[in-house]
Image 1 (cartoon, rainbow, N blue to C red):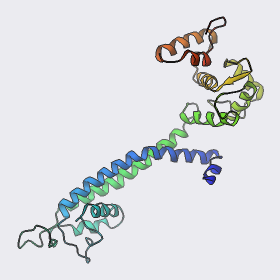
Image 2 (image 1 turned 60 degrees about the horizontal axis):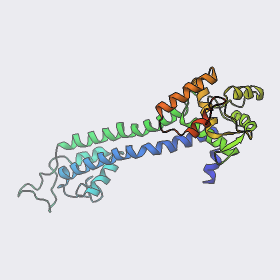
Image 3 (image 1 turned 180 degrees about the horizontal axis):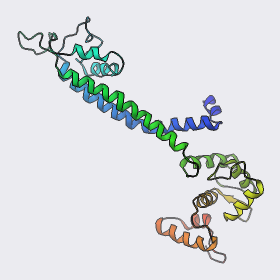
Image 4 (image 1 turned 90 degrees about the vertical axis):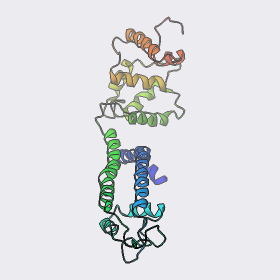
Length: 275
């Protein structure tokens, strides 16, 4: 865990770790699909090839057979690798039947089925071309989302803002307004200003965002994040006073349960208005 924490300090490694974590959240659904395919093919294999006698000289031996559900699933798992065609050929018609199976007299060599071609080829095609590609698609989708155009806001921008804010205030409450400029220069665009932004320019941009300032010279987490998102997406920013009133009306209309205290925190009411 210490090694992972150390690796997470680098931007590139953090991107890969984020991709890995987000992929794990979606992979259970892919795993459920795989389990369903193995279950269906395992049951069909038992019904079709379960009567074939175990013969250590063939590919259907004591380690590879369809006589129990567990062994059928284990065989299918092994059949996703090399030489699966040998198992398919061993399940063709003309195989000796297991003495304990319910075959008719004189039909001890009547087990097996030509369905082995369709069964094994379709199963291998599903595993080789569908399941593996699903895993790759899930991972690549998360990686593409993280490395897409940075002019588009995403959840990883919010994660970066929370991580940097926690260096100044772990409780996600308030910090000094002078610290906000330094903090936003540590956050990459479009949410922050970036380290290449001059200090004076960063101050002017912060003032233009009209982040609500408390009497003690601090700004809150919610108000700062709301102002940054609003400024990045150009949501009713000019003229700020008039647009504030319109934005307050829109928020009250869409999110009717928004508390007045929270609304006043992120969008200050006009001067002289009672809260």
